[in-house]
Image (cartoon, rainbow over all chains, first blue to last red):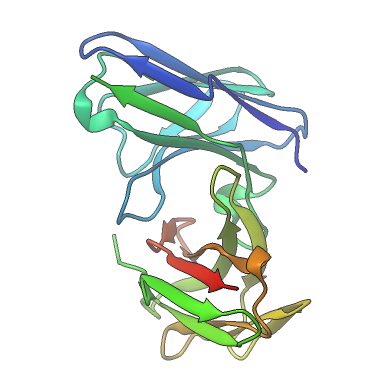
Length: 115
Length: 111
């Protein structure tokens, strides 16, 4: 299994509070991604990173920010959590951008509930 | 953003039977098609990445085909086993490096 650790695995928080999710990899892959997965939807890209301090927005980036200060760590912050951000969040990594012609490796996911 | 459609949404199959399901996608600007298996409470795991029209990939009892001209891929499972129960996800990559995911087909194998 690829060395990807997400923390926490589960989180319950209140509306309006900030929340930070962490993704840690030991594979030294250049690209890291944050996705959210909601019932009836495919995985949707929130933000991705292509190197230390290099990040870009995905299709559902509003209300989220990211940081990557080290190759191995990619943080996702919900600046002021809302109920619509209740979801399962997956971190993924790849060697090439978007995993275009090679596979993505996923973490185990974080179940976030915003009450 | 162009949609990737998977059908059916869910599927019940008797153990030992073979089955298949479909991933449909826009054929323009196509670059690659990914298949992943996602078991409950686990990480999605890559099965195949295919890039060429007519590609066929096989991994044990699971195989996949790709038709980029008409925009579809089939995933086949031969002789279904209980451990094949999972959600199968496909994703299409385009030449702008966008990876767009389908909502998945949930496969349940009945013993």
